[in-house]
Length: 441
Ligand code: ARG
Image (cartoon, rainbow, N blue to C red; front, top):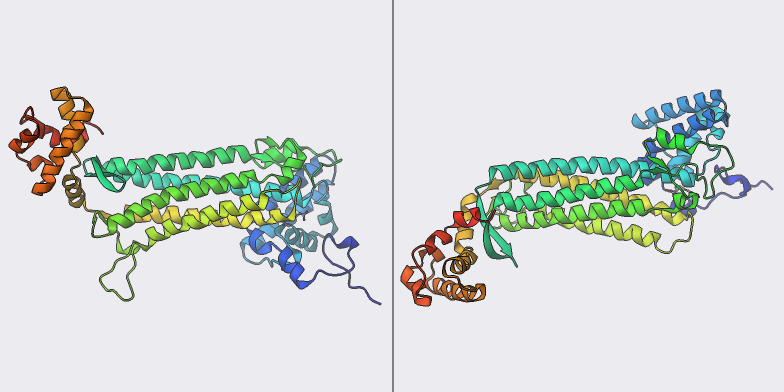
């Protein structure tokens, strides 16, 4: 009877091939092929170190380096054939290496396991992702700063409870988002700093008996140092969770601005018009110009939050050390990276091409009794009233203006004096919207 032996790299003790469904559930190549650059860099560093330590020969190392360079070129040129039967990126590359250089390929995995290999690849990938996102956040910030510098004098209502509260400038309002972006950036910086330790050498979980040089591989790959504990090295994924949180939080901030843009685009606000490039039409209502990009930025926070919860849930309760569950770590991370890149680019494009209706903003600030706090402060300063009394008097004056359907600074002096006879003409300087803004911002 002929036995169909497994041809998998790990198949020494296996007599049967995996079932098709087993192959399907086990394979991660469609996802983790995005780690190819990191996997090749990690393998090259590992082989160099093995040769330097005399664990493999110089000739074998040379062949391995050359073969890996060729594979990198093949992948970059689209000539590489990724095979599902070879499970993941690590085995796809190693198998191809064997085809190219023969038996020397089998020496590459000395003193290494896929467990420390994937942990290393993934840290390298997330590290680069942090760098890219920090750069994109900076571009987004620069757009906010440029807009702010153009709108130092653009007066608009500041809101609490979405009710007109006090007059502010558009520059100040956008400046708030600049601060958020600054903190978002620092979260990626922080995440990058903490993840920058090299798991290579942890092997499967317990290290290796070969006299490897972990400091060398760490240095070659740009890590600050090797990780301290081999078991933690192969099982830790908190760096990925941190990254996912940083993405979710940055996305959440973008969604708040997106929401404001959506509101401001509505004719009821009319503060801003998005360029045609950043809007869509309706298939039935010809008059519509919809802020779809902003809505999608708002909507995509759903998947950013979801990705964080996905990995937190995958990792919860896993016993040390590596478990195959952890193969589920990459998809959410890749997706959050792609999503946040897209959202940052969309917000940057949308903001820099929008038309701001400064007249509408000013009108809204003037019509919402936005200087009522100034009036109360004037009563405190000039008449030495306790603030609570001043607040009460101002409330009565606002009510009067409301009844007359006029702005605060259009309310005749005798009406104000009917509420409190100590009020003088001087009050109107406090009600001027510019001076109200200038005295505070
Ligand atoms: N594809 C695997 C992953 O992403 C690589 C590690 C496999 N390790 C193992 N012991 N089966 O997690």
